[in-house]
Length: 255
Image (cartoon, rainbow, N blue to C red):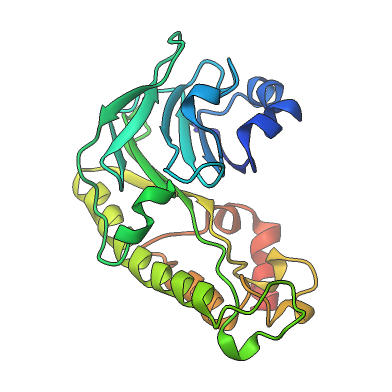
């Protein structure tokens, strides 16, 4: 069975609703949707915005920031967040309800990010010839520039590299988490799919003006190297590049 999957940084679900999110969702009819930056307290979610899909939502505890959700056509068999609880809703229900979730595979170093609503994971049953699937959804911190690249009058006020160090710490810890989550899924006979806004452009094809952005956060050599380190035929595969020959050919040329 083919699975239609979408990943969407909505930059605020209420603003996205005003821009046509609900009719887009109905028209595209995805089976799985990963949403990042939902930015909405559960009681303020627009009515009907998630259509007839199952909802698993970690809003975090930072008002007006972050928040990740997974919408699925199938009912999840399990839901995991780093905070130990998730807000769930089944089709036909008119409200989200709090549900304790079993502890996930959070690696050392990720605890400071628990209140921020950056990660949620669900297990979906198999269907026909499609095996069971674990879907993870991530909103990775934007970060900043290292101290030696910062200068007054830049796009952001110098912070001595604090945001950069925070992001690099997250990347190292999340790589360990990802390895554990992927192996846990494999051990349970499940495929593993990671969606999200990773706030890193892996190759020159992934952003405009690659040359002028080489000293910009999100395209620093060490960030790109990290992205490459989580990909391999035995671990995780970039699905778009693996299944679209024209894109893969361009990728090979630029690499």
